[in-house]
Image (cartoon, rainbow over all chains, first blue to last red; front, side, top):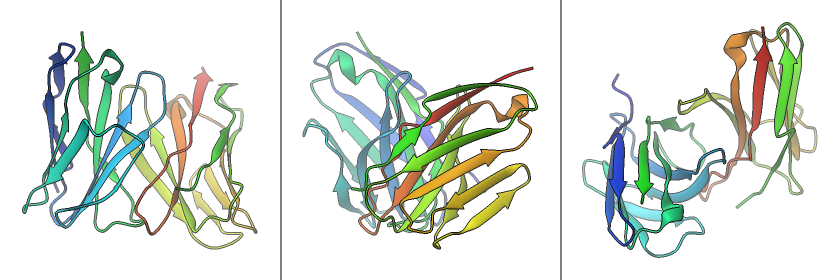
Length: 113
Length: 110
């Protein structure tokens, strides 16, 4: 079984630009979660998608947005990038939302200069 | 979402010593998951606890859920260098908002 895949692995952007991160869940998983992990810090919840709908979001500004496609893959968009957006962005999928174990991808390392 | 406090933040042990991390909440938890993240890696699901007072074992790892379902612990017996990493607890809810604790980073000296 293929795991959760994220692309790109690394992304370098300058302040003010926009970034798009992509995630493909495990086959059969309908829920996709996004987390931000700044260097040396914990996992901050960003967004949860299930069956194509945004179900919940964390305490992040509106310039963090995303969507889930009919094939359950997802993308995270970050507009007007700021230096503090530099972090590892982790995507996770689960069979269903609301408590099923999460399976994480390897993440996208976003660097904003 | 449900917030938890995880302690300690860091722990350095000699190989062979035991290690425990605690996860505490001010509110009753529905259930709780534990994850391990190796340095440079991504979090990996370890276990989910659901019942009050539940105890589950995975080889040298023992997971407990408190009787009041407000705290949980992970105990590692006779640590090995392969146990190095950050251990996160995460209470689950039916809102789907899985909030992770701050994590406990374990260093093991050979």
